Length: 133
Ligand SMILES: [Zn+2]
Ligand SMILES: [Zn+2]
Image (cartoon, rainbow, N blue to C red; front, top):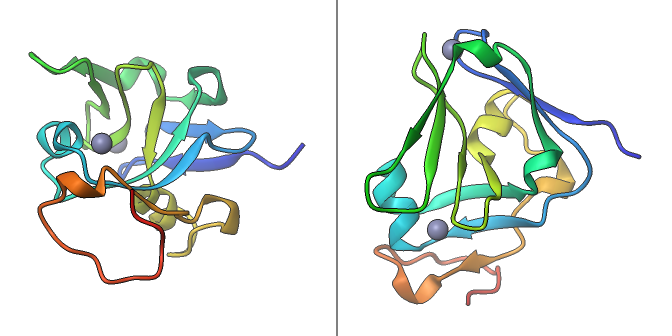
């Protein structure tokens, strides 16, 4: 059993722990991620719901259900930082950027991207060596 990965929001009220290994880690280029988060692609680690626990500040989180997508954003009500989001499969998606920010600006090796997903739906081209599908 590896050590859980821990992140917290900008103001420090809400902390999460992710345990085990993610289901997927990579860059998602789908339109749903763009619509939910207003980003060109989502830099993500995906986990089963029971792998991601809010360890502090649970009562200070707000879960916002997107009006048309089967997705939610869970954010800190004090600083507004999204600590994870969910998708239609019920996975919990934690941003690689948040993990990086909380780990001295480096991403633990097991959480580094293995590829690009839904690359055919992209709005920007990526020139790197990772597989694209
Ligand atoms: Zn906060
Ligand atoms: Zn996506």
